[in-house]
Length: 260
Image 1: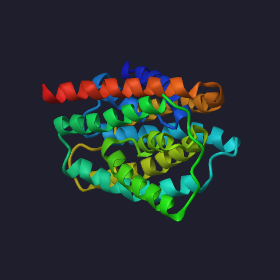
Image 2: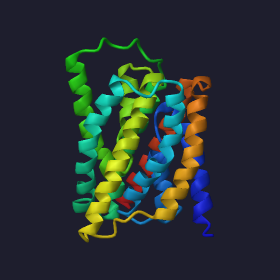
Image 3: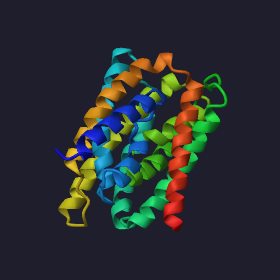
């Protein structure tokens, strides 16, 4: 058995355990591990990351469903926006951003603001939820569409970016986390299928690394289920700060690599 398989599974388990309570699948932090440690090439790393989401997020979703927190208006809005966005992002990733230099630049551009959102959100508790309006619903849908596109490029499904933005807006983590992970799962399925279609057209090495993606997914499946179960026990403020610090550190590393 190649050493990358168990290492990937253990890393995925730990990251999903830490990230799931905040509504993040762990893929946003697993991607640099796949690139730098496991040796998954670019752009194949993007569909591999989407494959991880497909295999890993059902664990957390099962737990949220058991607690009757999975289905709701926010989940429907996020899915309606991110599904078409992730298709567009997958095409952009293959056609315009296939080079590793361009990809690390985009990755840094996503990780740095995401990390700052988490750090800033960790400094205060969620405010009372704003009253739902039609205008607010359209704004959330438009945001989900844009983030879904970025998520398709980055291979994270989009929910990992939407989660901290919505929490920073004032929505509670217990509401955002199930909706963000449901969006991540469905958009990752769509993104993975889009990459499969693009591969059939012969547009480069964009097939996922199936062993890495599936074994990381199994580790994430267990970690996500436990993380969702631990959500009520974990201090929200410290968890956001930890995730924000990790994301910012990785984003800075990618900036340095891109400039070098």
